[in-house]
Length: 317
Image (cartoon, rainbow, N blue to C red; front, top):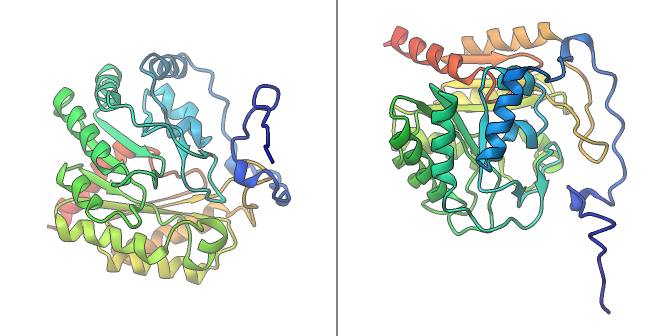
């Protein structure tokens, strides 16, 4: 039997693996502390035009980040390399899923050129998961880091990588390229992995971060989680302990927001005072830097946070 798909009148869905799932409960009305202004500034328009001019993808757009207006007005953007299609299907993520296209060999150079045009002193580079590639895209990350260094030698570089699950030697390739910050997000507590991040393994991600410090003890490491997915407070505190056992320097904690009804429900909106309490506890556990608020995202204020991170290390030396 032949199945014919009409992709002209019925375009391929952004999340085909979720298309036939029942809708999750609708996201509750956002409280006042989670609201942001629509992006309408001239700076935002200029950044948008530069991204399109260079054929670049940003996680700011693909993941529907609520901070895009603020960041792009300042000409801050997080570049998402290796295409706009992910091989995973996480229940929280708005990046589209499917079979990605071949890598663009010119992309690293384009990212370097865009970094120069934006005049960035600190840049964040992330990617989709590329389980289809033998090295998970590690060499492409390394090439991008080197292209930015060649064009903007004074720019500090932060990478937010996938987990390189079952990609032996991939992590070493990225660390060897010497980013200033290596970020890999745990995303949630272990008990929620099966429903939130089914393609990943909590302790593999934790070990990845620990391994970075074994390969280069001077490299800053960073990880983040979302709250509002049904986790318990004691589970968050255990994640903090796990990350500190892996010698992670920087922790981010932000509110999960539901991209569509096909994604995981928002179990609750965590109030700002709870974020402040978690921040206090995290600092007491030994993190050099903690960012915890409803609108905290991995790359939000990354440049300013990196400066504070360096200062915190020097203060402890």
